[in-house]
Length: 280
Image (cartoon, rainbow, N blue to C red; front, side, top):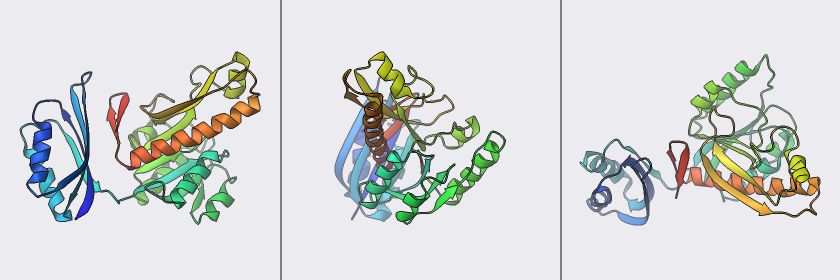
């Protein structure tokens, strides 16, 4: 037997869990893990089930779930648990998030296959090539932005990429590119937005005497830095922290939050529900 992950989103009504359980029982599949949530705001039901079954039996399970009268307006999928998400990382000059992702990937801590790193600068080439990965520079200017995004999208499609990670990629994606990458592009930013916009947000935070700093990882949408949030974290600080120390603390939070968000997405734990996410 092999282990599989099945994800289901459908209208919330009685009988859903029974229908899924019956479909799995019909092929003598063993449920290893199951998580579910009924969203009263949207009347949607979300379910993530990990089960052991023969690979050829998975489609039989999916067909039985689809045909159940309890399952309506559904989004249903299943994949092998050991199938890694093909990933491209975008980066500019700050390398702390990139370095953390590369280390966790190399050590087997992240269930992703990094197929390459794309940047609008040369700064991170040595780091990326040290890890034996392709490094592609796509310069971006006001005049070349459309062509640069088209080149990026061609790479994503050619490599059958399931996840694009903006690891401090300091470019605003166009609405068209955001739509093309909907649900499969994750960004990281400091949680001061929108309170501290513009340059040097940690210096602005220091000037205001903040007591908490943090970071948010979210899906990329056309609404800048307002996509559905996947993961967040904060650290308490005091008046004694210098702006430089706040930057260091902030970078540490950013890399941890981003790696957790990437793992959640790669393990099929994130479900979109309008402007927010359900994360199991």
